[in-house]
Image (tube, rainbow, N blue to C red; front, side):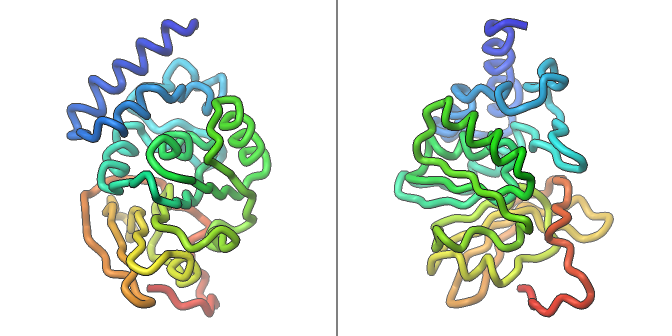
Length: 224
């Protein structure tokens, strides 16, 4: 496969996946069109990198389908002044997309190999407003660089831990898919009001659940 294959496949992804699913933000569309997703996936997945499918990156961890990711980001209303945290960013594709839309984007991932890969690729692309950090448990977020204007959880969760709410600015927003057992899940916007989160349901979709967010019975950290 050569560069022409990927360029054509990327253009087809924009025209046949993003646009038909209602993505209208021109800056967001341009970011997807100009970001080489093939740099973020294993060689074994190169042929399907721009297909309408989830791409396996590590055990039980998948890149979100591009049109679903774009539809989510459309609702995030990113601003050039935003400081954003992406939780569970894998190889950094979502971080790269957001980097063209905001002031600075931080990512956290619980696999050191993926963190190294993400930072290497992002640096090679000239994404100077990005940093990806290793966290053994994604639930902890990244307190060092908080508070954030927006937090995006790249995976499904059953609830939002308080530790992440504390990392949001007042009136800041958190985006994720809330999912109960055997339910497709709902992509939601949560706005911080005082120390609580007010949720707005945006659309139904499926994402794989992040195992770090599975609350154990003896977990003392109450959730919202």
